[in-house]
Image (tube, rainbow, N blue to C red; front, side, top):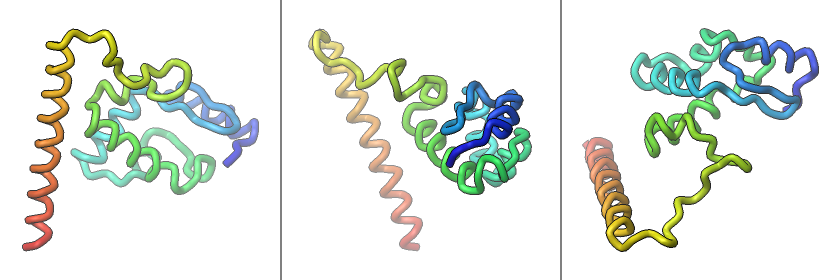
Length: 134
């Protein structure tokens, strides 16, 4: 989707927008976090969250709320609040965590944390399957 110059100006006026071009909108970190929490905790619809935040869905597109909140929800569940406040792409991205040069103890701690995360994820999925089977 490509925005017109007028649409770009309209989107830039929204306090939840950090920057906007004809091709993309960058949303504020606070808005991303607030949107995910409103979706998960307050059970607001994705479109309603964007409307409350002052977005014109006719300009953004009908699927944008669904797509963005789905992306942000995944990041929030995977990386927590810090994940939504860190740019995960482009030249400013921290990229993949470095493992070269780590001391053996640090490497083991990182691997143990990853194992614990994966075990918790497996437990969650097991419980989810059990609920669906009922």
